[in-house]
Amino acid sequence: MAQKVLMKGNEAMAEAAMRAGCRHFFGYPITPQTEVAAYMAKMMPKVGGTYLQAESEVAAINMVYGASAAGARVMTSSSSPGISLKSEGISYMAGADLPGVIINVQRGGPGLGGIQPSQADYWQATKATGHGDFQIVVFAPSTVQEMADYAFEAFDVADRYRVPVMILADGMLGQMMEPVVLPEAIDPADLPAKPWATCGHGHARPHNVANSLYLTAAALEDLNRERYERYGAIKAAEQRAECYRTEDADIVLVAFGGAARVARSAVNAARERGIKAGLVRPITLWPFPEDTLAEALDHAKAALVVEMNMGQMVEDVRLVANGTVPVEFYGRTGGVIPAPEEVLAAVEALSGKVGE
Amino acid sequence: MDRELQCVIAGFGGQGSLFAGKVIATAGLIEDREVSWMPSYGPEMRGGTANCSVTLSDEPIGSPLVLHPNALIALNQPSFDKFLPTVAEGGIVVADTAMVPELREAPGVTVVGIPAAKLCEEAGIKGLGNIVLIGKLWAAFPFCGQEALEGALAQVAGKKPAMLEKNKIALELGMKA
Image 1 (spheres, each protein chain N blue to C red):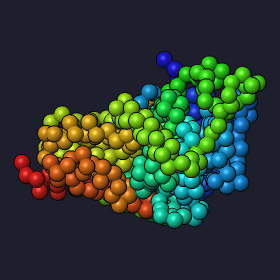
Image 2: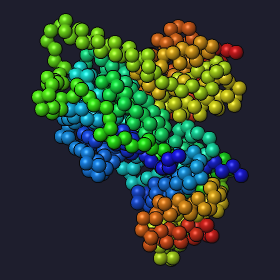
Image 3: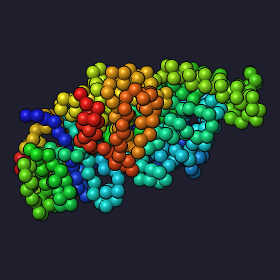
Image 4: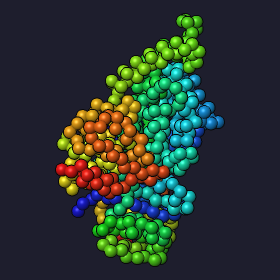
């Protein structure tokens, strides 16, 4: 087995991206994602890649657009306010069917907010990373190992469906160190060809165009419909979630990323107190793991959604529950990490309310 | 003895609290246990203090932020004052009395003071009080095997052989103090 190393989440994502064949990184500094860019700055020159600190986030995402259009595996990284600035470019990438990986190491918001861990960009990531009819795939890792695994896999998913893919992390996951086994490196030369790429071909074929401007309404509608068929395929094939002690759970906690780590501790503490609690942890936030969650809620009495925000994913959980069980929310925001005992208290209160 | 370690290491920036945390975390890695290391990176750092949370466990770790440590390494007075009330019952506090002149007791908590910075200065290894305190903590609460701890020190501080020698002396000073 490959060796375990101790790494920060931010560094693990950067290293895994390079191992996935990413040779181009365009960014702009912001806390708490700094180590992603710092790692790329140090390592990219060693493999003949590009690290470029752009003049702004807007410039960086448009460089990602360009490199992706040319067929390269490319990544950018930022934290919450910086992602807002990149959102125009992400919409353009979606509109031009360009793959690419975007990391968001979330911090408290809105506005400049703070620099402490947060999950307040759930809506932005899953509903509206920019204007227009589109979705991006969103992975929500919960450990440094998963940060490496999904940063690696994100490139495959992006290329397979020609969509931007986001890794939605938070300041806690980005800054912490855990043991991690890094994925085997891929040689970019071994990656499948991209027949749509706008790379040089010596007049061997009609030229390709990367474009998101379509002035004919009917043509744009057709294109959007075609893209939504692809989204349907993603929904069918790419939903991921982890279930923990849900088999007989009366109270199903639902939490992702850093908050899921706290929720897991609360589940164990609740079990010790005789409350049958379990945890569904969405790993893909879009597509939302509807089937796994529906199954876990099927025999539950209530759900408790735990987030580091004022209540965002809770709406998607309510859509899945569709009135069958009460869905309550516990959250901390602004950069505060909930304590396991606070979550336990919320579980106990809910358990008392829904009865035996 | 339960070896689960939930440790907070706190001091001024430059005293090596994050580094000390990394040594302990690496010891956990060597023993193939569950490990998390989480630095403070927020506004408290701007105030000149730096701290980190380290957990070594046999179970998957929930929040990496240690709220109720069973071990506290305090490198200065403000850190001692801030974190002493958070230490769990049965926990241990190791403080550098050269930097923490006012040691206090807390109910159910063992408070151990050694003049780590001063011991280092006398031994000609100035600035390694953080490693002395790790040694002292380990002697009172062997949260990992001795080989793992020494191996971790070699991994984390081993880039310059001369520095590693000094670190080894510091660890031993703490273990025997």
